[in-house]
Length: 175
Image (cartoon, rainbow, N blue to C red; front, side, top):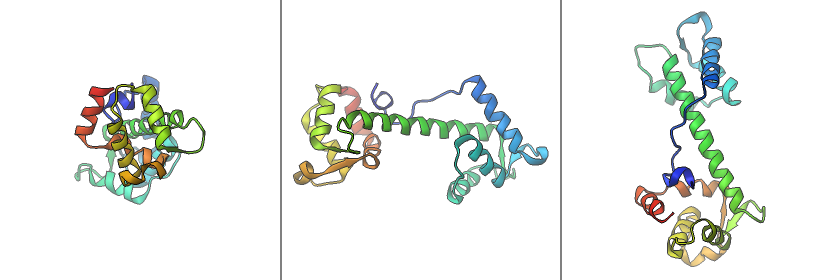
């Protein structure tokens, strides 16, 4: 369905056995000296191997502060949980990007209010126009009076599924 079953958060995703093995192999390859955990630097290398980017200091600090202080790094189970969550987030962002691209029928890289309304008439014809206007307004962070002049970019579109829980409940009932 639409936006991960209209819940607007990534659905729980399970890695295939081969992907799980790959993650364990990366953990073992990055665990220098077979300590049983990944240090900060080991973790950075593992993220590069799995996701193709070097995590920022802030990202690593955040993860390291959330682990058990009695360990000197990230244990295998913690690493697998982090990788699974990162993969879920990656899939979620790809899903949103795919939906935005489907809405952007003119391939302009942005949506007008009319594009947005037309898309919703196709995917959710029973959705009240008032709700569509409200969502568009929140996404572009604009005044209702100026909505016809606003453009919704992909970066703004990522805000759409993160509206308050009441909005999500309303979406799930109407879609």
